[in-house]
Length: 467
Image 1 (cartoon, rainbow, N blue to C red):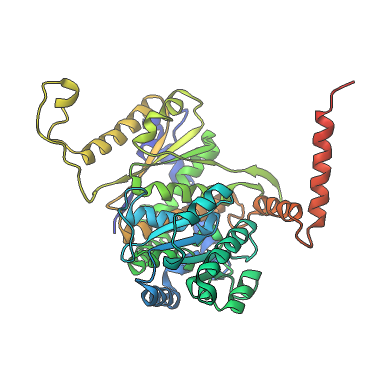
Image 2: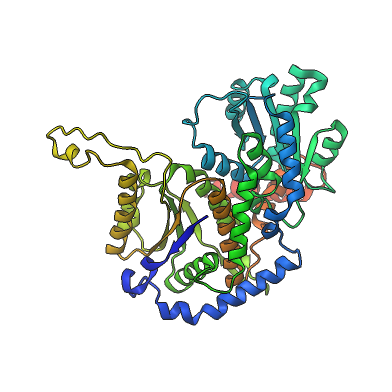
């Protein structure tokens, strides 16, 4: 497994003094980075945060593999019902290892597809159900709390859809991932005898891809989760090292923190030059946004901090976003994700057509072109004083993807420590959930219904014509 991080284009000597950071600045703040490492290691060792331990939970890994093997061949579709961290990790795995839709090939019982119901758009849900055969579908419902409104509502529809077709056998086509000791999903799973897997209390949804949340759907669609967790375990070892030349998660966090806090780069663009990593970019977007967008620091001081993450796809978004990135506000840092080896280089035919725009490409390859496009975009950004950096994966397979996901989680955790915030809570999300419960009439949330009614009165008053 080989993943590299190159911060050269973040440096003042390349990006310019106004927008780059210096080697001396990095060296000067290295003690702070090591303090962040020690602080997070202490939280991990105390089991406050559990994601570093997930690659080593062999009992869960073996249970997931055994279940997947026991049902293999009985379905051609895995229907995942979840939202946010309960869905994005599985999409990153599916897209990363099997390729993005719609180019995965025909689905069958030996090559099942993954259908993710992560929104309550009724047209989307009904179309998804119409595309599946209930007799050949295995449903996986994921909700740590067991009460997420979107997940519960969609699952009730899927459960009814399965029951109408399969009657008493429907429960055998459902697996649940939730907390081990609380929540209504757990109660229903026990009542109806679903195959159930558990998410540790010290692992939040956006850090859960290497728990049963991601491993179960991954194993069901044929991903080798042993290789996935092996890569993550190797990265975990590197992420605890105090040597920044080895610990690229910590080095990347330090460089991004300096650019953000010293050069006011309030936006980070995750820019994979691989369609296989496109799902990972959306997974990262949630990880970075929910973890680092905070009203207060650990001391309770209001800071309203957060770096806005954007997902862009190379080379596609060179033709849709880069105009803004090069000539618009210089408030961004660009993180390219490169791949050294593609499964197929995409050889371009050698035939020459006596047309300049065609002939220079003859005999070359798409892999060479996409690499040239990425390097050219980085150079163009430097011409415009736009700092950027690059993570390079040797290839996209289970081992490298598992390592990269773990790297991103460690980088996020270290960034939280550098910012002196709690990167593992999400009060902003919870408030929206409470308002939703109030609006939908859930018992115990009348206070939030009243607050919403007051909000509506304020809106009505603002809309009223002035005298």
